[in-house]
Amino acid sequence: MIGFVLGLLVLAVVMVLDSQIHPHHVVDQNRQPDTVSYADGSTHYVAIYETRTLLGRDRHHQIYSGRDPSLSYGHFVRVDFTGTDNLEFAAVDWLPEGVRLRFDSGHELFIPAEKFVGGR
Image (cartoon, rainbow, N blue to C red; front, side, top):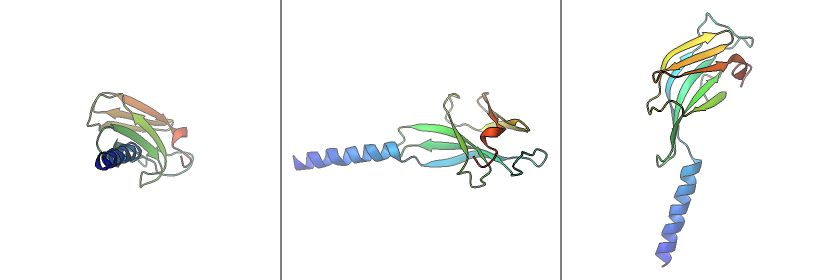
């Protein structure tokens, strides 16, 4: 009986940790070209992160935009609308008003410059 209870406790701990810890890695990234500039004078980046729980029960993508070359501090948007497991950029258009992302799935996303300019 004690073994059963300990087993349930271990299972509960694993499930809680799995829902809280989300390893991620960069799938694709793009750097702002020199031909486009923003008010803060920084170089900006966009990237696609794949994030999943430890046990793989939840898998999703996030789009990063910001000026941090390590791609860790900035504006993140969760992307669930593409219906694909392997999301990549088909095209990235840097514009003075923001960045337009086209994905290999055919979907597009526009991120206004005010969401990633100024250290966000």
